[in-house]
Length: 142
Image 1 (tube, helix red, strand yellow):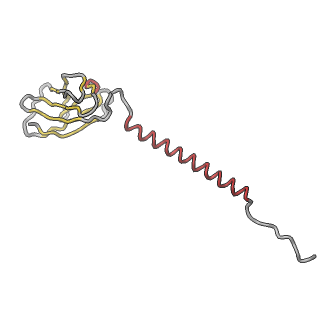
Image 2 (cartoon, rainbow, N blue to C red):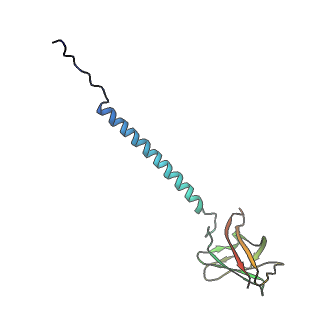
């Protein structure tokens, strides 16, 4: 029977297609896990604990021009004030208390600091050892 030649099938077999699809899924899964891992590490860097009970401070500030005091009220959490450095317009102030919670507001007093009522002052709270800024606000003295 001439003229009848067996045609060869050209194309990929089912097994090869399955292997390609499984390989692609494995690669996508590995890339997804890596992206999630790096995202978790990046996000956790914002909440890393440095020994303080509060890493991102939640404070309320007021300045009394009559008594020359800065009062920082802790809104939530507890703060060991010896782990922080407080500056008003670049001048470092000292504190009278070591720890504070929401019930008691620590009062900072500064040597040779004389705020003028009605003037705004920039208050910055830094980590004492590393110097990272943890809280900042501009407050007008009363």
